[in-house]
Length: 100
Image (cartoon, rainbow, N blue to C red; front, top):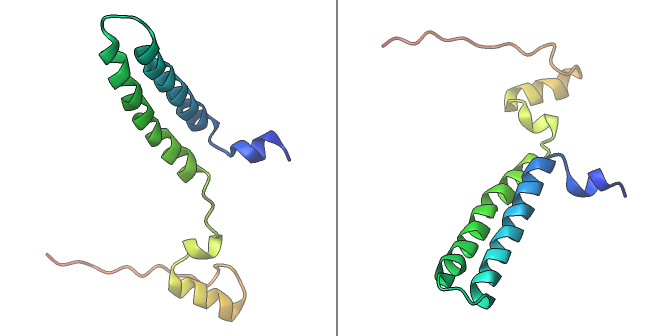
């Protein structure tokens, strides 16, 4: 299995998600175990950064979704292509005038 197949197409979002997770965990552990007077800043900011990494995890997941071509077509066009066999030659766009 190739490394690109495991990572997916959105390497930047995966990298940012893992980076935010690691930085948040390091800040949290420094706040717990380091003898500093402002430990609460690290203990509170670490989980917030880990929570913000969820945004990048969601972007990475959504960027790797694949949608079949048949689902992108309108329902009428899909039925038309099943009947005729050609993949879009018979599709026509209906235009309506709107009156306000």
